[in-house]
Image (cartoon, rainbow, N blue to C red; front, side, top):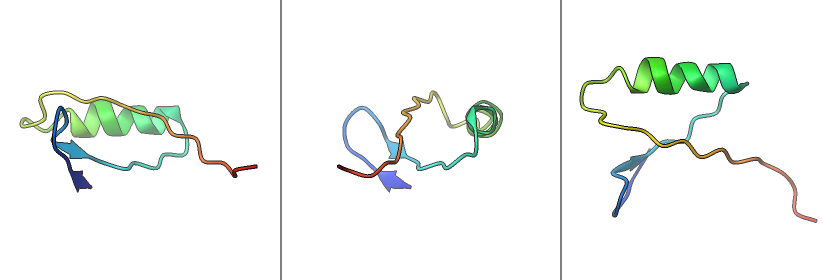
Amino acid sequence: MALTGGESDVMLLVRAPDNDALRRVVLEQLQAIPEVLGTRTFLISEGSAS
């Protein structure tokens, strides 16, 4: 977790084995927290630089 300035207050790194698992984390766990007013998801693919 990192605290940020600007538009976002907090940034989380979530590693999920697939899109369904990521969906469960975001929609069922994070958005179930009353203080969470909204979320934004960025997908980052890991890979080696050539």
